[in-house]
Structure formats: structure tokens, C-alpha cells
Amino acid sequence: MWFDITHWIDEWMAMYDPALLRTFLAVAGGRSFTVAAQQLGISQPTVSQQMRRLEDEVGRPLFIRETRGVRPTEAGEALAGFAHRILGAHADAESYFRSSPTRGRLRFGTADDLAITQLPRILRQFRRLNPQVDLELTVEQSSVLTRRLAAGHLDLVFVKQPAVELGEGTLVLHDQFVWAAEDAEPFLKQEQVPLVVHRAPSFTRQMAIDALEAAGRRWRIACTVRDINAMLAATRAGLGIAVLAHSLIPSDLQKVEVRLGLPTLGPVDFRLLSNPSAPRQAVESLTTAIRSATLSAQAPLGARSR
Figure 1 (cartoon, rainbow, N blue to C red):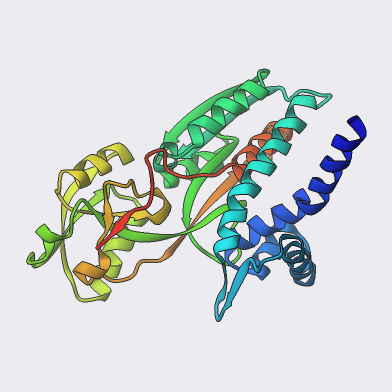
Figure 2 (figure 1 turned 180 degrees about the horizontal axis):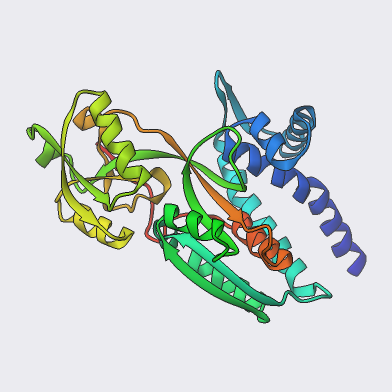
């Protein structure tokens, strides 16, 4: 019986090699074989070869090739969920059985809207698996966190940034900004687009204003907020329209750009940035935990679009 079980495990591991799954998630997250190769430090032909091997083993195509990159097929979307769980289990096992437990202090900062995802669960699990790490958490806007990181006041930050082909740090998720509201109907006849925005300076605030002005649309600041909870509360109350990453829209809000004829907004990357002088083992351990997990909002997603 023992031989049969270990033989089955060996076959399972051969089919879903963690190295292939990490490459797959890098391609899916960056929507590009080139971006994945740069992120992983390997050649693009190697990425292509690994994805062909994974598609052969799964028995289904995992990506749809498009002019400006690739996107996961339905099978690819399904595999992404399994891959996150498999790599999460690997990370847990490696952390648990590590001969030299991670120690020290880790000053971690996260953008406030990322704190409404599964990040709290990830941090709880990290603390459980690394009890000798003193984790200090700071929740702020991305711009504040990057300044504090540069000043040496933080070791690792999880932030949103406008998407660029060669961004710094570790790419966790590639997403798209969208316009979100409780309902589009109340804003159909308004001459000015009412905005719910963060206090300046905020790159999402400026992005919204620049996009509207470029499209010749009039706008007004309907509500200025300090954090994501206030932004969601104001948007749910119907005070105005917010700019949110698509994956972070709660199910009680909806995308409204099509209904209201609003301009398309830019892509966004969720990235982990670290301080070169930070404790490497703790930084790498938390980075692995975050990259291996599924980062969706805690509220059920599936934003409505009208």
C-alpha cells in the first residue's frame, strides 16, 4: 500500500510540476510570455517550451494568443485556481519543515484596498508558519508606502502601480482599472461626472481626471476619502463613481463605463517591492506566501456590468 501511495504522488507531481505552474501563473498574470520570461529570469523559448509541456500534460490549450499578448482559456482559468492551491501547499510544507526557521522583524506595508482581499488570511497563515517573525503591518495608500520604503522605514510593500512592461519588484497580479458605481441610472442625465476619489496625491484620482478631460467630459469631485472603506461606503450610497481595480469590485457594485460612455482606463499591476537591506529570508517567505495565494476580494466577486 505504501508503494502504491508514493507511486501515485510521484505521478501527480510529475504532471503538475510546481516549476511549470509558477511559469504558468507568471504568463497568466502578465498576459505575456515575454513579461513572464523577464520576471522569472529565463528565456522566452524556455517559457514557451514549458507551457507546451504543461498543455500536453493537461490535455487542453491554456492560452489564447492575441495581437498584444495572451489570455487564459477557460481551462487556463480553472488551472490558475488549482495552481495557486498547489503552490500554496508547497510553500506551507517548505516553511513548516524548513530546518532554519525564519526569524527577526519584518515591517510590511500594504495598500488599503488590497487589505480587503484575502491578504489578512495570508498574513494569519504566515504568522502561524513563522512564529519567530515579528510582523509589523502598515496600511496606507500606495504612494505613501513607496516613499516609506525608499526612506528605509519599511522592508516589504504590496502596492498598486500603473502597469509597465518592465516594472520593479515582483508582479503578483495584472489587472485593469474600471469605473464602478452602485447603479448607473442616477448618473445618466448628469452633465458632470461625480467622482469619489482619494485625497491628492493619488494616481487613481489623477488617472480619472486625465481620462475624463482627454475625452472632453465634465467632472466634479463629489466625495474625497481617506481609505478604501470610506470609498466603498460613498460609492454604495450613490454619491458618485469610483475608480477600482476590476478584481477588487465587490458584488454589490457594478462596472458602469459602457452605460455612461466613460473613457477606458489604464491597466494596473499589483507588485511587491522590497528594501535591499531588509531581512531576505523573511521577505522571501512572505513574498512566496502572497504570490502562491489567490488574491480576490473577501466579498463575493463577479461585479455586475450594465
